[in-house]
Length: 191
Image (cartoon, rainbow, N blue to C red; front, side):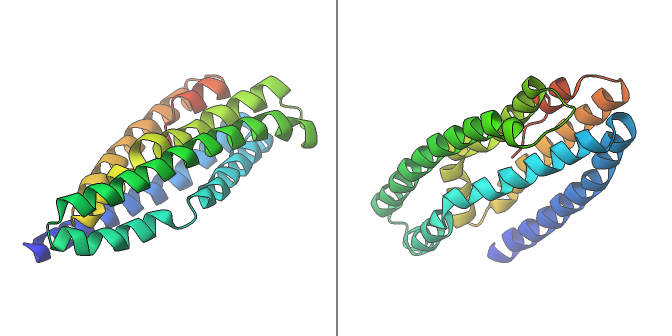
């Protein structure tokens, strides 16, 4: 049973990485062709900032996961619930801080980085790019950790992969159809 789950985790992990790489090559190219280097640079910069914001998690997920492994092996539901409750509280606080950071960056970034892209467009693109992470911390982080602790990370990986495929396809269609960058970023949910 454990071997079967491990194989599923491995296969879905590889498929997910392949999807991320494939769309990670294609979509920036489309942004360059359809919007130019300035918009592509904005999207790349914002994506990097969002990656740095993930440092707010501060390893709590890994610590919670380590704490859960023994409790899951012992089927100690009381301890599992206590760990998940503490993790959920931390992730909700992190989600609020993440949200506040996204708002601050959305307001300050256009002030300090001069661009031909309007202030309002830059601000909305940052908000739409960053809010998915806040949502993840606030609502989903604890569940992902629990699914991993019980050895079924393939479930989480499958959900993330399907969402990435759907949002990437929608972004590609919107880019090709000539939609505004705000609408394109609004169609994209970052998991």
